[in-house]
Image (cartoon, rainbow, N blue to C red; front, side, top):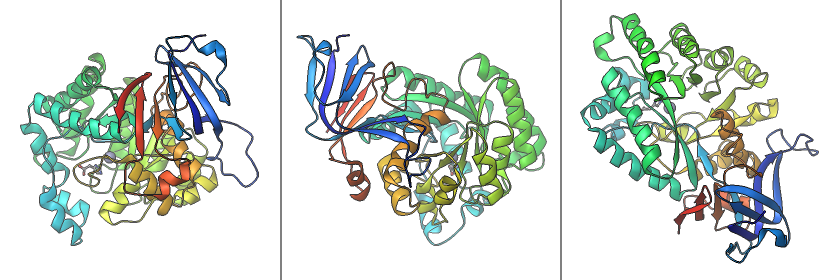
Length: 416
Ligand code: IZC
Ligand code: ZN
């Protein structure tokens, strides 16, 4: 099989392919393959060869483009599996309150927070939202991110929710980063429904068939949190969404423990996200399930809150992903590398665990592990060349961008 692109002389090729027999002393999240002195062969946007040492001559024709990685690290394209990508405006007007200790849920209660972004998003045109999101995605791509999950939830009315989801669809057609779309109509309770929660919940449920029919979202998500949507309310919406063939994810146990992780497992969600306040019972539930624990430590950092007990979860056998939670309130950053560095420094996650969390586990949390998340024959040629000789360096030297080149479907889409 000829290749049209070959990367050779790769110091550490993190294929992120999982193996089942763990080595002595390794956690169940350190079971990813790293090839020393590797090569990668690509044809037609797919991986056709991968291995160690010299590139076999069968891959090379005289038009093959050869890239010398000069001993650098190559990984799968990073996957940011939890973002609130599409929104109008920003919330720096709440920043001073926030750093002076006004709680996140209190700002929301006063009509700020999410509800402030809802107003900005309702007031923005589709064109403005597309332009803003494209700029964000360009920054993300520069950090090595080739797939992004994007939630609605700054509309809270039919028109604006659909507008956000249309923007997701357009973004998939108009730029390189692949978008996985999530309908999150239950992100907050609009003020006009304060005395009629049930009517709002029903209005979210009523939107499900239309969104499904128009193929505007693959996933459904709820902000299950004290003072936002209760366990019972969340369960009702999640089960309705499931009936309409949505895949599920859930904002769970972010600020107060109300049993969100257990609910995520109960409804068969692909991911339970945040988990800063998860209980031991929640950890047990996740451990015995296929639900991925999607941790967002940038949010703890930004809200000055406790970090999710990642070590405890991983040591118990829970599979973890890491994402930015990019949003205008609790985590306004596109920088997934910074999140990985915080995961090392604050969650005490180990280098292999961190790379697993932003590649194959993130892919699983989106149900896309057959196509992306690891570098294996037949999968998409989404990969990053980092300007580093080993993965530890990328985590240790924090706050800068280590990306050298990013490839999506075998095409160069970012170069430093
Ligand atoms: O806009 O504050 N946690 N939703 C749930 C968010 C954070 C986004 C926001
Ligand atoms: Zn979120």
